[in-house]
Image 1 (tube, helix red, strand yellow):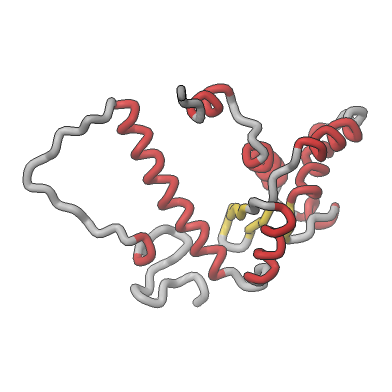
Image 2 (tube, one colour):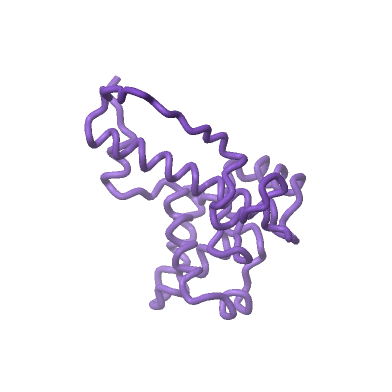
Length: 173
């Protein structure tokens, strides 16, 4: 079975396997008071959960049959800079890249007269998704929310952030 850890035999996709996470349990006899505010503690917990989720996604991607080769991924990185993967299910993964500003301006100008929001989302996804190759047949046979979800993460990877997310990235010098 491709999606099972070779060390412990547990599922790589469901998060049962944590062998690669190096999460050795730390047991403290006396709790240590934290210097963090409750908001900061929530943020730390959110980051930890995100790291665990990323590991589940990466383990699933690594176990995926027919995925792009490591050489292809490196080539895409040379051409596009950052590239990402998203996994909606054990057999529905995508590799995509963020959009550059000029691409965004050109695409939005081309799509300005397109009244159908879903068609605009599809055009952005077709431009950004590197693998698998998206075409109308793939899109129409996919699950209903995949394109909308891809569209949202592509925008976020392209630094289209909600104001609160953008403010969280700001620091006074």
